[in-house]
Image (cartoon, rainbow, N blue to C red; front, side, top):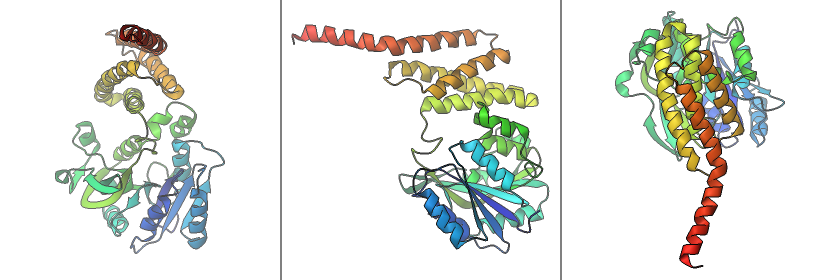
Length: 341
C-alpha cells in the first residue's frame, strides 16, 4: 500500500468550465493525512488538457494526470483510475462536480478508520440546476443511519451520489475484476460504468453509514453522459442493467426481474411515443435495444409473449419512421387542396 491514505479519482472529458473548481475543492480539503488526486482525461477536445497540465505542474506531489490517446468511454476511464488506486480508501468525482464541505474527506476517513466492518460512508449531495443550488439527493430522515446489502434489496437504502461517497478499497486492490475489463468492448459497459454496480460490490463486503452533512455538489447539465441522454436512452440503459443483474445476482433475481419489467413497460411506452417524432433512435440505442431483445430470449423471461409483442412494436416504430413522412406529405396535400391554395 501507498503511504498515502486516500486517492481521489477524477473523471474528465470536455470540462474546461468546471475542472478547476473540482480540483480546487479537493486541494482545499483540510486533512491530517496526505492523498493523491488521480485525473484521467478521456481525450478532451476543449482546453481541459491545458488546465490539467497547469495543475499537475503546480501540485506535482498530489495531482497526477493520465491522458487517454483517444476517447475510450467512461468505463475505460474508471478502470484506469481503479488500476491506479494504491491507497486504503478512494473517492470518485466527475470533473463537473465539486466538494462542498472542506472537512468531508477527514470525516469520512476517520469513520472508516474507526469502523473496519464498514466499506462505505458518505454524506448528502446538493443538485445544481441552471447554476443554482437546489434540492438534496438524500432525504434528511435517511441520514445518520447504517445500511446493509439487505436494506438495498428491501429498497430502504437511499442513493448516495458518488462524489459524496468514500470507499474502502476492497474490490480493486488485487486488480480490476475481469468483467469490468470485458465490459469496455461490450454492451456490459452499461452495467459497470455506473455507480450502482460499484456500490453493490462494496456493500456486499461491508456496511454503509450516511452523515447528515452535505458533502458535494452534483451539477445537472445537458452535456453529461446521463443528463444529456434522451428519455428513451436513459430508460433503455436502466432496463438493460436490471435485466443483466437478474443473471449477475441470481439470489436476487426476483428483485431485479421486477425492476426490469417496470422499466421495460415504460421503455415500450416511450418507444411508441417516439413514433410520432421526426428523429429516430440513435444507432447506438438501436444496437442496445436489439441486444436487449436477444437477452430477454436467452434469459427465458418471455413466457407471457412480451418479447414477441416488443418485436411487433419495434418493427412498427421502424416502419412508422419511414411511413410517417409519407403520411405527413399526404396530410399536407389534403390541407392544401381544402384551403384553396
